[in-house]
Amino acid sequence: METYEKTIMVTGGAGFIGSHVVRFMVNKYPKYRIINVDKLTYAGNLENLRDVEDKLNYKFVKADIVEDEEMQKLFDVYKFDGVIHLAAESHVDRSIASPTEFIMTNFVGTANLLNAAKFHWQDDYKGKLFYHVSTDEVYGSLGETGLFTENTPYDPRSPYSASKAGSDHLVRAYYHTFGLPVKISNCSNNYGGYQFPEKLIPLFIHNIKNKKKLPVYGKGLNVRDWLYVEDHASAIDIIFHKGKVGETYNIGGNNEWKNIDLIRLLCKIMDRKLGRELGESEKLISYVKDRAGHDLRYAIDSSKLKNELGWSPSLVFEEGLEKTVDWYLNNPEWLENVTSGDYLKYYEEQYLNR
Ligand code: NAD
Ligand code: TYD
Image 1 (cartoon, rainbow, N blue to C red):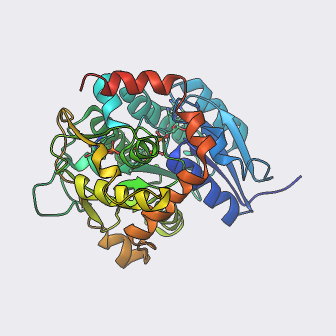
Image 2 (tube, helix red, strand yellow):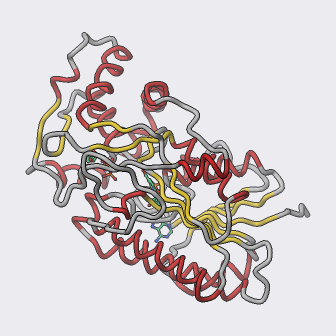
């Protein structure tokens, strides 16, 4: 039987960022055993991991992090050395429509994992690590200027960000109270292949392709800092291995875009790729009712990560966006699969009366 240096539980590994993290770790560390624990909600899709599913150092386990006993059992069976915790409900609009699931998965689910790790590791914390993946949205909304640092006070304003903020606080509490070895990172908006098309970039690629309206919330003046998802995976790798226990690291793309400017750039790229006349896709832009409590601006100062651990983004946005558009255009079956069934119902409820 193969012996492994470490066994790592990656939660939410069938989702967007999780699948990139699993792929990255499975390929880069053949001596690590990666156990992907995922409930396979609407956002989890094993298609995302087709290229690694047969690797010997990879295993998928279908489980819900809200099931406390189930998590304890998994720790018993697999004797994890580390956890990289990404499983979450992740879409702000859904958190406005049904907050409870967010509280259960993001807060209670995280508490269950912390309890299981504490129970199984407390006799000897050496070599153990609980890495919690979080979002910049916990810091709230910025005005025209300023950046989120690791010391920015928490000010979450959506049920999604509040449930993530709560989970971050729990992780820190287990570090201070019980000595559980933890690390946290808070990252800005990710984009790239395998993102569920309810989030801005894949939704708009899908709609442009199908000549459907592009529902821009409010005036399109909200600002987000975008990071290519593979750069997030590489940052997680560096923090997991080299970051200091008990510390928090902000991860960002140093890449702020007003929504409407990003959408116009995306329309141009799509016109070119689809052989349409320049300006054709922009005509699909349709301003709709703003999101409730819509945060104006997110922007990350990731100088701690750069200065202490030497990480910086590898791609400029225009390049990353081209790659992303190519990915969705080259994987039409993936988009078709995830945009049938329940997705259509969600789309109607979300956008029909806006
Ligand atoms: P996603 O919605 O694409 O994937 C979430 C995954 O978690 C899915 O595979 C889903 O099946 C799984 N999951 C949900 N509930 C579960 C449960 N109860 N038990 C087990 N598995 C469950 O999310 P994502 O965009 O990949 O985000 C991953 C993590 O990164 C989240 O914690 C999110 O808060 C954080 N994050 C996301 C972004 C972003 O831009 N997407 C930015 C910063 C941080
Ligand atoms: P989203 O991808 O949902 O990420 P987040 O809300 O976590 O930042 O949205 C990115 C931005 O795009 C956000 O300001 C909301 C806006 N947006 C739209 O204008 N229309 C849409 O249909 C969606 C999904 C988002």
